Length: 277
Image 1 (cartoon, rainbow, N blue to C red):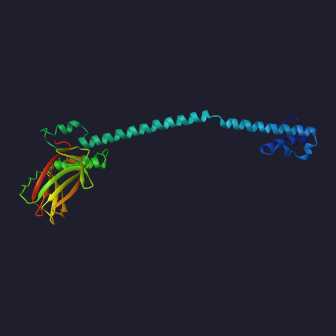
Image 2 (image 1 turned 180 degrees about the vertical axis):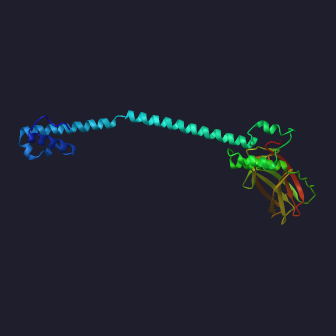
Image 3 (image 1 turned 135 degrees about the vertical axis):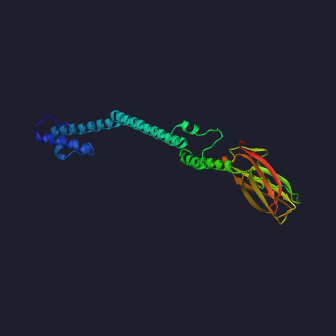
């Protein structure tokens, strides 16, 4: 508020009254009667009123302008903070990679230290040391770590011979490997191979001449029996199925077998899951 250049206290009073009433949102008609009766006081009141309106207008215009100074400072802070965060992330990644390399190559952290210890290229690290390396690979997901461990265990196992398929009155009139079973019918069937991205598989069979008996679906590889699922046959021509969750660690040749109630193999089919190597 710019007070008018006058020493007259009445004029100053009129000016400040107009200014105060305008700031308070009062209309010009709210002028006090003692000021209204004097033309000079009314003039100073009007000047105070107009001064208040001008001040309010300027304040609103200033508040509407972009605060470029503060925006630039905030932008600079964000850039510096982003660079610091990126540097910290890079440092953490490099540190983690160094730790993983140390786990893979041993305490000396030298690739030559392992290759020099292996006189034969087919030699492998001791089981306990390799397991420790797998557990140390924190960059892997839990599922990937499990797959690696299962692959290692699979390689260590000895082959299990296939049982002889016995002659039987039980007839398998239909057998399908599929991605799903909908309305008692196999959906998206596979023949000789199943892609690695498939993580659940169904074995669908139509069984004849086994009413009232128990039969079994056996899921296996050449080294493991992964599931033996009991199924009750309720008619002379009965459709039934089982399913198995898959892991990328189990890539290779699979066998699906139908067993009678004595767990003798009466039917066998095979497929390759993912890669056969």
